[in-house]
Length: 603
Image 1 (spheres, helix red, strand yellow):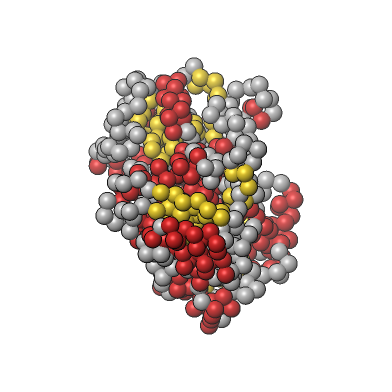
Image 2: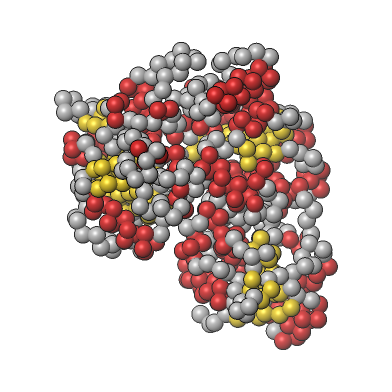
């Protein structure tokens, strides 16, 4: 391939006219361009901390830039960088535009002005070869100060992973298109609706939820013709009729988990049109003085039923909200009932197999909603595995690993499955697993140790105490419950389910604790209640007068380990405390050869 050129000049009519006279490709060739308003700092590099950026592509770049100059939204931008290559075609430019938008949003130093008209992820001839060229474009732009961080640093950040500027998979794109189309039809006919988006770990439920919210915010705003492209996935939604339907609409994004909620608020603060106050707890929804036109609920399975809350204040709030909404303290009402009562339209992101505490809504609560959604064509399954490189089969395999209640378990019948593109290993030594994780951290970043809640949290009161002492290793639980993965101590600590659910890692080292073991008599997986230390995870429900059996607790613990075992994008390492269970799992997980060097299939 011939080298690409990046022409840099001022964003004004005279400079655009001069460029058009120097390069004929400016008006009759596929071009990607970057507009920004960064000022050079004392080192002569662009200071983008308060800058804005816009990325576009066009077959007639000069005409498109003149359109931008006629508008007001980009009048404050000062610099153009036009990326031109003799081998570029329309598909390449759409792909490069998408790549640069995603990377700029993940870098976080610029505020990305692009709208969610539909970033493409379409294949085309020689795409892999062109995408290698994109890395060269990135590095040249980074050397010029457009990017602050490296590609691995960006791709490991929450700003990148939770960004609304994502290239959707086929089933994600179809779901978004159908859901938004149905939502506008419901607004037009003034009817209510409940939509269910259902998918296992790593299918991108959170990504789809954030994407839809950003798309609706963008549709509701004024848009200049130069910002739209007929090839964009969702450009047909950007019409005045839909903008009018959204006028004054109240929209909220509900996230039950504290850790994930804070991370998404950080992303929303950096995204035009979105704001941190859109991100709500279920209690904030219930206490709101107004109703909502639309509530998008991520991790709906983590909504609570009536149960003892972490504080007396929340117990009182639960009761007060229920009385206010339903006229009486009806103990059968749940946070899902609040959502339904406080909004005309709901989009629920759901995977009941990820419920991890008795207070979480039981799966049967969702059964009728799912049945209704299916009958009204408002049910959208997500199946493409977007996180784990081993694919969707790995998730099902992991669920069966701890699912056998007898020697004739599903896994035993199927035998070992291999995932050659995925680094899946069982370790006989926790120290060796930790050492290997450190190597992966040095290579790729985001390699963390996680565990079931099978040890008391002593270090919460005594910071010098060790919580987990196993196989000669002394470790502490996470020192922060919020944004733990990115915290300075996370590499030396162990994360629980409450710090990692909803997040991605490159490599996860999972400690399966003594909270479960293999029954030596019948070969079934059993729970050791005394070795499970999440108080709220095994607490009986005094409010509803419901007791949770060992089988109930085993179901929650299996869900927890399934979540932990599906966090790693590139690989998952496993250490099992119970000798019998470890020996059993040797049949189904490749055993580490005690060589910490990376395997050939690990990039």
